[in-house]
Length: 305
Image 1 (cartoon, rainbow, N blue to C red):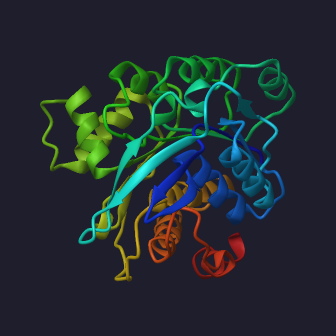
Image 2 (cartoon, helix red, strand yellow):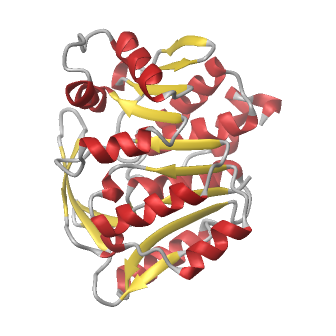
């Protein structure tokens, strides 16, 4: 299993603590834990030449993530996001600091060499990491040079850090889309303003047809999740669990579905596994919290894992 991840590494600052995060990093971390293979996940990102940058790389290496393509900037600091957690809903809001290292990921000879020498099974990106033209141009070059079997886009819309053109560019490249209900509404407003947003299945079918995407996963919070694929429409309800916070839940959901798709697991079980992993994450604090990975794999996927 060889996975290439592109995007932000940043520190979530909340409750007086600094916790490493960023959707691509959280995804890399959770997928590495699920895959249980050393350096099966490589991340292309950038951090500053500062303490946060040093800690980020050390943390990733400890989690068996390949860090050889994480750039070190002396002009830009490691990214940060100040997080505010709603005490009633447990849903986070963010102030994402601008013009930091991950906004300035450069397409280097090292990246070019690694891409040309390796055959990747999977690639992952989101839209937030493409907000700056430097990182966006780098990812466009990567898209031109890679065509792995599984191409995952966890859209990750934050604030106004997206454009219709950038989303459209990535949608035309990927074949697995993970999206939540708020992001689905955003896509509806951008591309299909005349479609009733209450009909999620209809909208998912429209996206699938427009961009030829074989798998669309939609998370619905307490209502669970659903999946539209070539084989039909699948739904999975959520379980009643105690929510500590939801930071990283979507990233772990995407990591789990990526692993299941790679393993060739059927759609219903893939959806159930992704939801089970996400529910483990919302019962711990932060996007890097730990849970019993092996137990979830055995309980949901069994011998297929």
